[in-house]
Image (cartoon, rainbow, N blue to C red; front, side, top):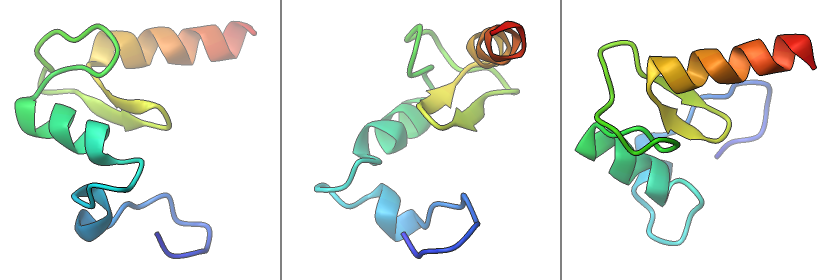
Length: 67
């Protein structure tokens, strides 16, 4: 990934087999949540930890606000 303030991930970075994004890319292509492993819904989000369904991403956001 290029240096800077952007959190964008380039498609080339996603599909490099030696990069940290392979699991995220596989979850995205399979449309499954990287946390609970259920089918991702229409509101799925990319988080710092992966591709998560809206329920898991919302739970993460709530725990961050409380903590």
